Length: 286
Image 1 (cartoon, rainbow, N blue to C red):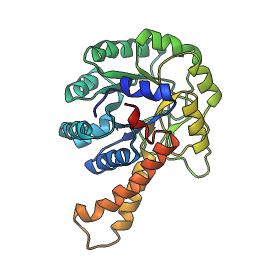
Image 2 (image 1 turned 135 degrees about the vertical axis):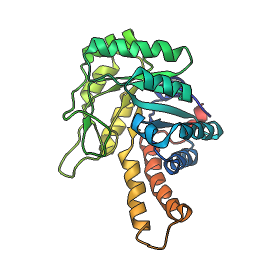
Image 3 (image 1 turned 180 degrees about the vertical axis):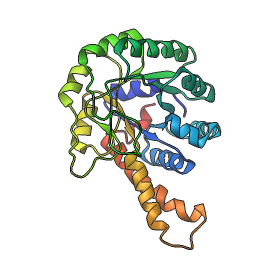
Image 4 (image 1 turned 90 degrees about the vertical axis):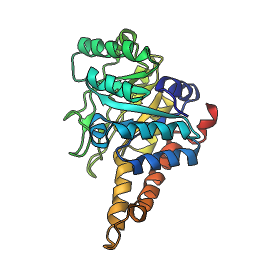
């Protein structure tokens, strides 16, 4: 069941749960995410970053859309961290049902102008738009791009941004980072900041860099209005740690021999996220 983000997250916000957005860059990861969603009877977001899209190619999006339409659960195909109007137009033409315009590194007025241009374009063809305020940190060289230090969102800018841009969802920087946290680093979400933001706007809020944060903080963030949580490192690490283990057998060379165990390992993480975000069983609400 293919949906846009606005329709998907309206239900999540009304029923106080969050939907994981899994960053996908191969058909094995796509299969794992969709199988886990169907097994958990949970809605899911398939997120594809422009760098991932450049790697997998436009034909991958066609396949993802076909699989989403066939799925027994609600699925959104989302462009993650789009940074130009050319990328956004390309994604819309390819069939994405949701796009993100990330101009969070720019001054507020320029961020507003860029996102407003995208919402006017995307809404005309029933495609949802995500914006971002503040900047997410970056923890390692394999992580998506981010700032050297988290720049927390200014709550006073949130309502102005949402009213001026008409975005459907808003990613807010409240202390998370892309990638996996080192063992000596303790992540901490600014729940007080999130509470203040939630009181100012009536749209679903998004948490980027959701891998590696304490489960208790994530659960509290969902209770305070986070409706979409981006997951990449946790899921991919499980997949490729298992791949390294499987490939210790030097005889194996067929994908059908190598990848099933990797997909299963990834699905364990996905199902845990569905449970943590209170998404399990929520497909019945659509």
